[in-house]
Length: 450
Ligand code: PFF
Image 1 (cartoon, helix red, strand yellow):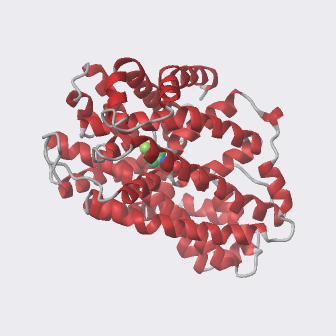
Image 2 (cartoon, rainbow, N blue to C red):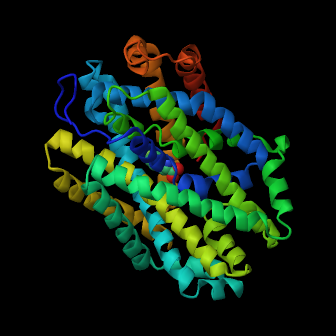
């Protein structure tokens, strides 16, 4: 499809639904199913959920609209987008930081966990339930992540699947895959929720999840909620900017953003509903960290009738969620290589895929022990730098850019040159100019500790 404004030919999404599925596919990922519930467990149950919702509405969603607007106006991936908009080269920092530091670094650890989901899909059908039933799901997990070669093999497999889709292109690869995988994910989620909330003793989990304990709120809760909101909405790394660059001029940015953020939030909330009632019903504690999905849940499934099926479905769900997100991360890096070095899509995907595989090896092997970076292993350090530094910083810069340096053009872009009525325009302006930058700066300052 060619651009109406005469820019270079650029592939666009095939349909509005397809685009929303792809954006939601990026947003809905390990963050929703693996990370959100364990943060809820750690940070005071429903109190965290309330803070998370407020942050997502007043900070995450406005920043997403801003990223889409920059991308669609520029019709370029992040590194070249700001040049195309004829603004100070300083702002290209957002693109470089997002693509190089963020995209590559995030994918390097994201793929590792993506690989675990494949291992667990297979293991669910081949003996994990017996092991977990005997109380050994923790040993199973540590012995798996302790064998670096296995972790690397599964990580490579996960990356290869991601590459296979991204090579297909924006609408024939990513969009097509997301249009099938996202509805399937939703159906699996509903099956798991029905199973979970109908277990005897499920109420304790519902109570934990739904009744807020505000005494548990600390500076860290806010930082966790903010980092989680950006991570979950795929903000700050130029992902939504890139996806925005494939949007046609007739598309409505505010409503597409609301759909994307809404679906993402609903799936995170549903994940808690699938997990906590079952965990409490089976007499477990909602442990934190990777352990909740990969150690506690197999033990929970093992105690259920037909647990093998539910375990298989859960890890399949996690895999679908992860793979549609890793596609978006790979797409940003690939789009950069295509635009900057004039590579074909295939060359770009192979080249970038190789670099990401190599970069992921320290994350994969660090789980088996190895050098620490100021007390954190490589995996935790990469996750920390991405979530607590790069994502908020990228989002801060994007909102300052749009709110203070590019506002008239952004308003033109968001309202489709004044043709589209956006009732929340003033609220949005207020959010990108004041609420988002100030909140990010404050929370960043207050909560940043290694
Ligand atoms: N949003 C994804 C998730 O919740 O798992 C992860 C992610 C994808 C984060 C893309 C950041 C990103 F740029």
